Length: 466
Image (tube, rainbow, N blue to C red; front, side, top):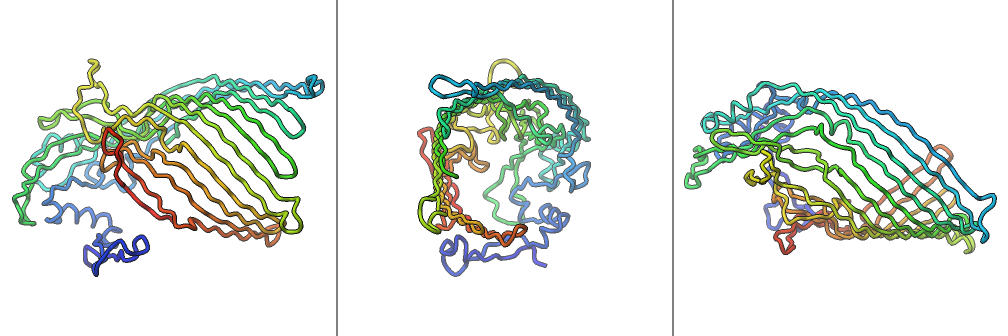
C-alpha cells in the first residue's frame, strides 16, 4: 500500500476554508500508522524526510522500542493519618433580643502523609542517519546509557483549622461565614520517580542543496536534555479560604444568594519547565530541563457571586412549571509568572543560556484557566415526567497557556458564550430518556497569542464545537 493518503477537507469548518478544486491534504497512510515498527522504519529510512534533518526517534529502552512506555511506570506507596476534632455550637434555644440566632462549628484536622517510591530513569536512544549521528558522538553515548534506578521518601504534615457559622435573621434568610485552611495533595502519578531523558538536537541545513535525495545536513548540535516524568519534590497545594454570603429562600424552590470570597493559594501545581542543571556534550554546555508538574509559588483570588432562582408557581396550569436560573461571578486572580531561568550553580546569577523550551514571555501573571467574568442564564420547564432546559453560558477571556508549544507566546481564549439545550423524560421509575443539544448557535472558540511587550495580539486558533 501507498505510504500516504489524500483526505478531503472540503467540509472543513463546514466548507469554504479550502478554496479551489484541490481540497485534499496528504497524510501518512492509516495502515502505516497502525503498524508502529513499519512507521518507525519509514521515518528512519525515507530519504526525503531524513534529508531535512529530522530528529525524531522512537522511544527506546536498551535498543528496543518501548511500546508500554515503561519510562512512565513506577511504584508509589502512600500512608496517610488523619485526626479530626469538631465542636458544634448554637444559641437557637435562647436567641438574641431581636429574634436572630447563631449556629456553627469550629474544627481542627491534623494530617500526615508518608510517601515512598521506586522507579527508573531511562535514556531515549538517539537514532537517525549514520552521517548525522557522527556529528554528536557524546550525545549519542549519553542517550545509550543504561537505565538508572530511582527511589525517594518524603513526609509532610499539616494542621488545618476551620470555622463556620450561620446567623439566622429570619425563617427564610441567614448570613453564612466560613474560614478554613485546606490542602490538595499531588496525585500518585505526578509523584512517580520514573523519568525519561531525551537529548534534543539542532540540525544545520545547507539550503543551497536542492537535490531531495542528498543529505543537506552540514552540522548537528545538542541543545537540551529534557527530563520528562514525575516530580518527587512536589508539595501539597495549600489554600486559606474566606467566604461570606447572604442567602434568602422562599416558596418551594426560589432563592437569592450573594457571596464574597477570597482564597490565598501556595504551591499551586502547574505544567511547566524547570532548569535543574547542565550537561556538556560535543563541546556544547546545554541545560538539563525538567518538563512536568511544578509548584508555582502563590496565587490570590478575590471575587463575588450573585445567584437567583425563581419558579413561577403562582401562574395558572402548566405555566407554573416554568422557571429561571441566573448567576454572575466576578474573580480577580493573580499569580507569579513562571520562572524561565534557574541559577543551577548557586552563584546567584541566572547564567544558563536561553532555550526555547524555557521561554515564558511578557511576565504574564493571570491565574491559568480563570475568567474575570462569568454568567449563566437558564430557562427551565419541569413537571412530574418531563424536564427541559435552555442554557446560555458566557465567560470573558482567560489565559489558557503561559507558553504556546510552537511560538512560546502566552495564549488567551477569547470571550465565548454557548447556547445548549437538554430534555429528560421519565418513562417510569427505572427508565429515563435524555437528549442534549450543544452549541446551538455554532459559536466559534478563538484564541490569540501575545506577540510583544505592549500586549499586542495575533490570532492563534479558531474552533467550532458540535
